[in-house]
Length: 331
Image 1 (tube, rainbow, N blue to C red):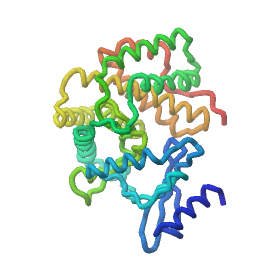
Image 2 (image 1 turned 30 degrees about the vertical axis):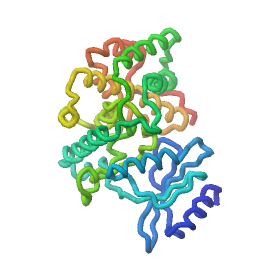
Image 3 (image 1 turned 90 degrees about the horizontal axis):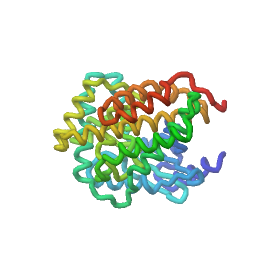
Image 4 (image 1 turned 180 degrees about the vertical axis):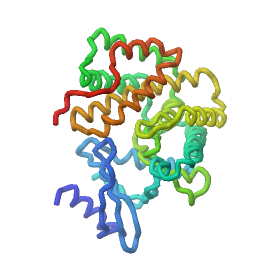
């Protein structure tokens, strides 16, 4: 028995779920582990194992859960916690991820995405104080985006020169400087594989929330981009247009500055994702991330078509090839 397994067993022994059967759930892109618990008397639950030895902390997840539940939203209820060892026992919200539900019921797409957009608008209206949330601002956007130069470009045999890197940074910072200052909570990974359909609940609580521990205080367009420019699920231009219109109607932010911010943050996010996915390929030979790159590239090209992003579009066209066979895997 591994040390972490023994710790999990000891932790669960202090809860009503002692002796429950643990089944691993699909991992995310971090070192966090999730287990579904089944117990003959207590029913299902989920165990989050965020090992502090890997640099993880369970505190941000707990704080954000409290904030979201305080707003009446469907973040999982916390049953027990041990922040010293990074263990959290929480409510099991089920398997009805938006992505899973829509495979079986594609006609519900506007219903589910509309619910997600309405939740964003409501959250941003009510959660505007930066209490304890780290800033999501241009310096961090830049650091994140540089992953495309550090991982994607070399794996595509197109590592840019130092001069080209400097030009890229200057162009990106110039575009980011046009954004309005941080003004709301950003959940960061707000997409169809982190949202659950809970039709038995009422109102905005029908949208279950997962994977928000990295929430930051940033620009309101970011989570809308995350939802509509999904790396893992196709969204049509028509759906994106309808949902952007719905968001604007709910928030009143119908102006050219918002459209520019949406495109800028879309480009930033998709460049970052290309870098992250390339890193997973190079370091771990994770094929599924390689297979997602063409969709991310298509989103990037759409964002770069905004007339205010011409310089960035020209740089990407000159220095970054479309996804293809990436070299550099260590396996």
